[in-house]
Amino acid sequence: MSQPTQFPQWLETHPELLSRNINIHPQGIQSHFNVWTSNPFEPVKHVVKYVESDSSEAAIIELLQLDLASPNHVIPCEVIRSSDNSPCLLLMPFIGLSYHGNDSGTYSELIDSFYQVAEGLEDLHRQNIAHLDFALGNVLRAPPGRPHFDSRVVPGKWYLIDFEQARVFDQGPGHQHAIVLPIDTQYSKPAGVVQIDPYSWDVYCLGLTCRGMYNVLYLCYVTFVLYDSHIVARLLQWIEGDVQGCKGCKIACYCRPTARRVRQALGVVRWCLRTWNSASGMWKWFFAT
Image 1 (cartoon, rainbow, N blue to C red):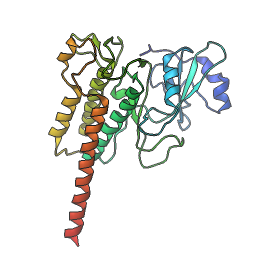
Image 2 (cartoon, helix red, strand yellow; image 1 turned 90 degrees about the vertical axis):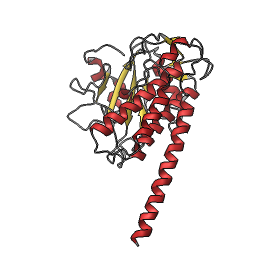
Image 3 (tube, one colour; image 1 turned 60 degrees about the vertical axis):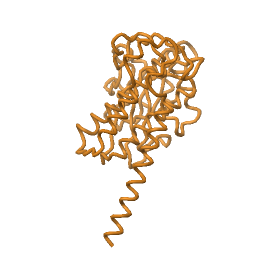
Image 4 (cartoon, rainbow, N blue to C red; image 1 turned 135 degrees about the vertical axis):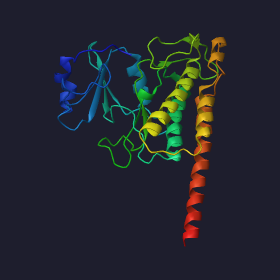
């Protein structure tokens, strides 16, 4: 992650932003270091992140914009490059400053949230891209129930952000050798683990992210009775895998499932829940009539 920085004055007069009638203001909300929002005294609609012109983040974001439909969960973004070597801009719709839960706090929606972020991670891995900083602070949920001003944003959909640490590899999951992990990541590395399969590290962080979604969004903010909490506990333990076993993984790591297997398992759980809820609703209707 970048170090905190002061507001760059050139953003106020950037011709590409002015031509789009986007006003980035010194008092705009700085959501993350080199990420700024539009004027807070107006309805906030845009987020701008500036990165170096040769940044791999910009190249990866451009690649992932080709088709924004699910299973792609990357936030819609326009990469604005300059003719010289000045920083390029990543222009995104404003969804929120942090992750968003759902209002109903149902077990089905919890599993659906897990499914969506797993689906997004699987799609990255399918393209040999490892996020390497997958975390609760790097997933956002578009507010459900109402259309967004940007038609590309799907209400209720989870989006992945911040590809600053992301890398493209020659080999995919199950074939990629271990790498030295980035120093600056939101989740701490397990004790004694320095090198690990990058895709396996992403899945480990996926488990921690889902655990955080469960703890923060549901136990703290929503009156939520999870009648099958042991299922969630087993799922999270399975996703996070054998942390200590990773010390011996020099090639591909099999201490936890792949993102694809996680998405498949969550899909089965989600289908079972929807079937159960439908059947329960039918029984209630039957006995009420």
